Image (cartoon, rainbow, N blue to C red; front, side):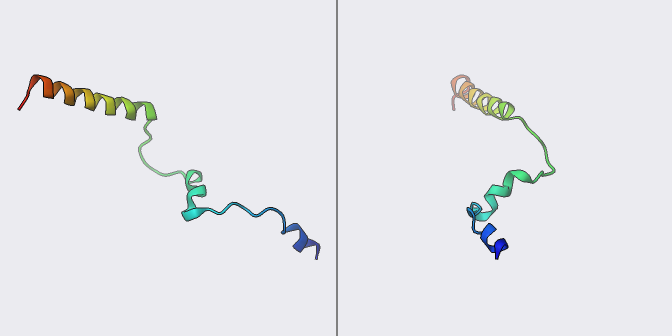
Length: 57
């Protein structure tokens, strides 16, 4: 009976679709810092604006 009483504590949080365990798994792939992704995105926006200014269609 004592083992059943110990299991009646606070329930574990529900992992909807395994989202709680998402960051525990290491994936094999390219590791890119967030700063680089933001810099590339801003660079593409700037290049796009410059093309529209200097090479209008």
